[in-house]
Every structure is written in C-alpha cells, then in structure tokens.
Length: 138
Image (cartoon, rainbow, N blue to C red; front, top):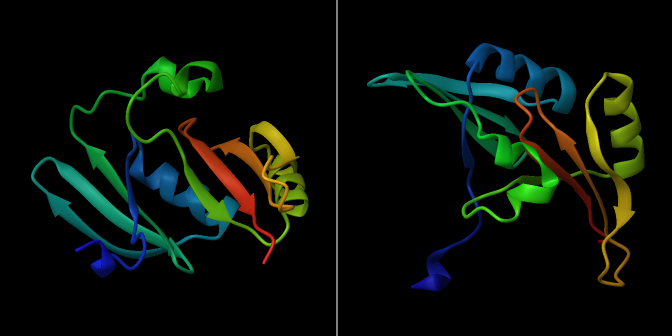
C-alpha cells in the first residue's frame, strides 16, 4: 500500500485573515491563487508555487494560533505539524530579500548538520507560523 504514495500534495493551514495571507504568500514567496471555494463556516483557497501547495482556511470562530506554537523553544514540545519547508535555490539570497521586505527571520541561514552541504533558515509568515526555507545540494 505505501508504494501508492507518490509525494506530498499540499499542507492545510488555518489562518485568521485569508486575504492578508494570500497577499503575504504572493508578495513574499511568489505563490499564486489556484482556486477558492466555501465549506460550511469556512472560506478556502488553494495557492501554489511550482509543486508547493498550501490550502488556506479561514474558519468562523477559529481560535488564533496558540502562543506555544509561535515560539521555537515551545513548538517542538507540541504534537502535530510545527512547520512546513519550501525548497529554495539560494537560501542566503532568499533570506536577504525577505529581510529587506521586513519578514521576521527566526533562524538565519545555517548548515544542516548532515554533512551533505544542505542549508536551511526559518522565517515567520504574516500570522507568525514557522516556514523553513531549505536549500538542498542536488
């Protein structure tokens, strides 16, 4: 059965302000809106950049992100997804450009301690969710 899984299709993210998140991901990371729809009590939009897809949900009555999910020191102590990673071609250039736009850099570009030469950085989106920028060695 596991041979049928090909790759990750998308990550679903609950946001407080769908329009603000659409603008942030478009303006900062180049995502484009693919389509939108409604569910009972929710507005939903799929955005994509290449193979990376995020399904953004604005849900009536949804609680804002818990403070423990906003801090690197506490997020790893919580169950569930704590971030998602996006492949970039140059993590240093990407982080410099985002910092120039006022994006919060949580962890500056660093080497992955695997000895392969991969590099990573962490930023926060408009709702303070952690996003990893990952530069693999191909």
